[in-house]
Image (cartoon, rainbow, N blue to C red; front, side):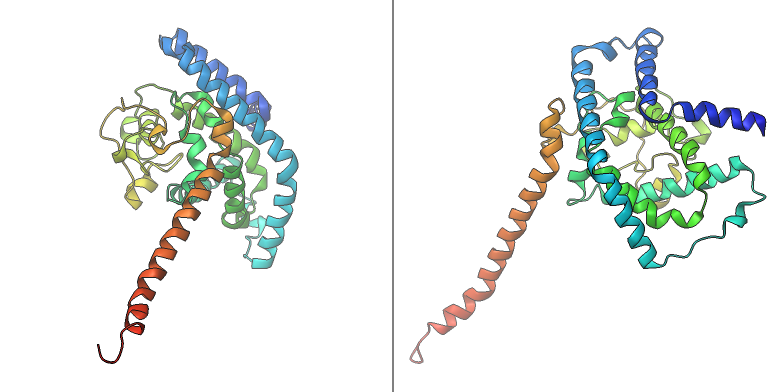
Length: 297
């Protein structure tokens, strides 16, 4: 137990902004150890700078929004009356096993929302993460502030019933570390364990800016979910271009990245309104034409 507590304390040290130090370390390791000289190229630095600005904006949003959202989410959860496990269920369960259960459950919840965010109306929420054209450890933090809100609401409904809050800090740090790992550009695929634990090869295809990879490899940790639901795609090591420039989102301008969801939703709404008007005109045109025909005709 003492060893376990030491591990927990060590992982907890990386909570919050300190975990960014690992992204810096990962970049330096890639540059000096793996000889990835492009890690410190102008292109990489510009993308990383944009990521840091977006992350800062997210922190500001958290200050003003997350408290109210948390309160509203908890109220909604209580209103729904979702049953909860009795915490005593876990009394004799090893802490590490509780963490495994939490990771498996969270990854399924992430898969569900991630899949929704790769639909037409969900994409604007997630596009910021895919906007990075130089995917590295820092890409973990390139998310629009709307995305964590949706994820949080999902966790309230899908995970709170488990009643294992003591595992949350450890799981959060472990998954953040793993998330940084899968974003680095190394040819590791985990061999016989490739369906159990996501690898950099697996996740790099998720960021490939090519049609055949769109909406694929949606699991963050356990690719088995992609295998089960038909979204697994790893034809080999990915050497395709990264990002989402083809969808119209910028990679190096943080302001355009942050306003993209609202611009895209506005465009989709305009399209929907235009289609509805055209459909209404088609329905009314025959009626108007018949109304204009005289009895003699």
